[in-house]
Image (cartoon, helix red, strand yellow):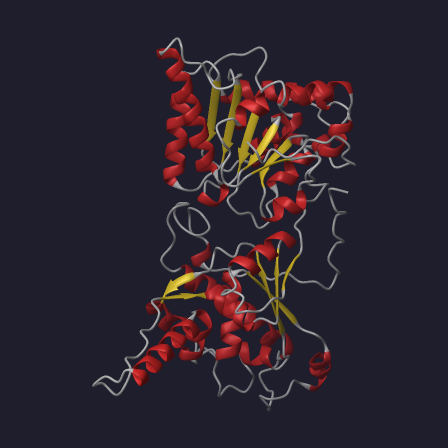
Length: 484
């Protein structure tokens, strides 16, 4: 029940169209030369993709340039006027489609013998559905960039992409105040134009339906960010999922090449082999029996809470150093040994703090830290299989799939009590903590007899817990660690 069945294959008639352009073929990362720096023309790159999408009806519905009417579809295509047309706008990247449809595209030649781009699509009266994977990413661009976007009705588009209604309310309030307290000036000052425009806000104001990637996150956005939804209460959450065939530990070549066979029947011995393999590859200190292993796999970003992870481990290292200097100082909870592996790229300052943490940990007797500043799916698969615990301490999380992949590979998810983590991690399988605080006792609890070793002892005598973690029916109560 933890994993939905794989989706059916697309119908034979489904078509996938790709756009080829030099602006998409740059080196570096998707949005910029590095994870911390964006390309200066990302708005134009996304607009190119959106205009290509708007061209599809023009070429499909008006293949002949000899059409004599720009207001009607060709006779052979008239039936399409009665077919539902839905355009799914994925995040702010696709928001210009809604803006160009509503406010016009100066790039369309109105004198052409066939409808162009947004004109052709508008004849189909499409339904716009906005899908927000993360409402924090708004597509915010300076207003000076708007001239290059080619939107015909500039003022209408600005109104859609800003919260100008709030500014107008303020202006009306100032006007009312002046009426009650007249001043020498007979006219109120104009409202200053906004400096930045939010594409996602524009798409939200123009869409017929809005979706996001989990029911709990939909409630959080509705409650915490009503201005984005323009007072509407129709945001629907549809929970994400993973493919159990793509992510199948028993057939995972990344596992077979390193730690060998690994599935629900061999999980106890297999996890030890894979943990030993990870230890050999990533840690300096030799160990015949590696300690409990915690893994973080994901983007190095404030949202993901990895900075909190760094702070907690630094506090424990400070406590250890103090105990070495002062024989009367006792380590909190008699800290047992544990290891942490962080795999991911992103914020340069967070990456630097992780490298410093690795350097500090090499002087520790109890705490071992490894960091790989890269995206390596093969290593991620190995970590899910090797880790006793997978950490997801997000400040907010629309849905995420790391926790689902961890469960699929037999790693206990330790998650923040937020967003899609609530919807995808059963309370009797995962451990929930307050977001974003882990607390100094977090690792000591999970690595002690009441934590990881207790779970391992239980798992060695029965597979009930691993049945649940691997996607069967969970039967072992793990509790809520919200007090940690």
